[in-house]
Image (cartoon, rainbow, N blue to C red; front, side, top):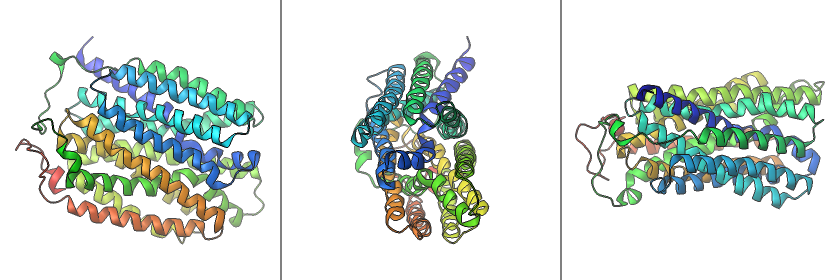
Length: 423
């Protein structure tokens, strides 16, 4: 089999693995059913999602730093196994009505699996495609965004209907499906043979020190990534309940089933935008520069959040949410190629893994902020959340302006693409 065929097959396997893992982004589909069934509040239920995203980022950082010690296949299989097992154990904890157990099963175990499974295909595929970094890493990460579409609109509704809304059976069956598919896809991942690696003409880092971790460059990239994540993930965790709140005010005669269906539809469409955004913005950044791409993403979202704060029309709301998710995915589609541009493929797994701790912090802060506002200030929760999100995005835009200055962290190849410094 040719190298070209090999690498595209691996890219497809990595994308399908990400589809399984991306089911976590359909969490808002279960927010209201879990609250109604177990009498937990917004903060308690969204805490499961927050913990899962926190451990996703932490496990991704560990996986990135230790990828040279373990094969991509081993890490991917382990990640898929932990995620599927965590979801099955979550079903056991739901049967026992244990919130703490749910935090440990879905949040800690499942979240750890998410992190190990997420970082591996991104780094492995990047080594096969140094000539198409933004496009192909965007394609692989697109799978994570599309996972919520499959789960929120196809798998979860089908299982809810088949089990008469029994959440224990739903989580157990989803866990079994993801356990089989994710580990199967993970078993296909591998690094390219050393003699067949396509030459990478990007920057070459000098030395083996960790000076990059203490550098201004790294933490500016972390801050920009964090600002984009915290605003978007707050929306992901509550997009269905927020839309349902608007719909109930807009048309009080709508049935609960209609509201749930509308929320699932928004999850599906916004997930598609999330996935396509990873591919679109990743490719866009190949032509117009990483910094400039982030600046467009952050600035346009800040305006969108400002409009969302005063929007009462559910259809306008849904359209704006889809654009936010397009940009949210764009951050994940652009950052891997940004790291490759600045630090080279050798350091990429470690540095990108460490940058994913911004995902951990964003996952803890964003959903919990909205949950607290919904539990304590029901009527004003949405508007205030969007205004805070606009402010956070504005901070990210300011940080991106600081990246216009030349790099000082590493001695880079003079032929490196200038877009990583000058936008």
